[in-house]
Length: 193
Image 1 (cartoon, rainbow, N blue to C red):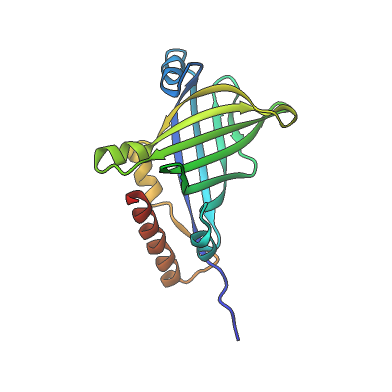
Image 2: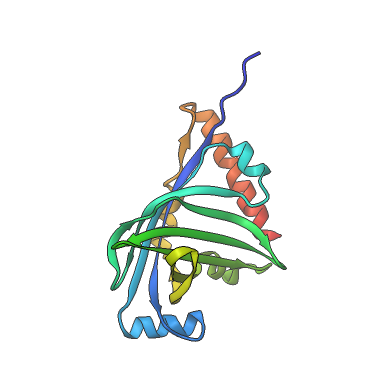
């Protein structure tokens, strides 16, 4: 009996903002903005097996891309990145980003979190477009916080993300449409929980 080959989809996203030093993310954002410490990343998320992704409570998927952090480098490659879409942490849902990269011979991690609560309307939009980010140095398995701040996705970037979806594992447009609609239903449902 023939088994159906897994299929899924990929999509791209870009966020930008400011990173600096401060007691919290917003204070660090303001300090970074004043010092023009701009940060940005461009990533592509790949979900090669929609069935496995849906069954995973962490909804983890690999990502690739590039990032820019003022004072550290421009268009640095992300190495073995990953995202957790709508995973549960405490009382709420979160979207977690892990973007490891190298600067010189040292290893760093840009770690980000979108914090989602049961809000509607404009507040839900703010939560889905705001990423609380940190840059960590990772010498010898340790982690040292260098910067923190806030990155955002603009309306034009949201529109570009919406049209960036492409099939993985299939050339059948009907199957891609089914995977795409399944992903949209999943996202909509998780945002309301």
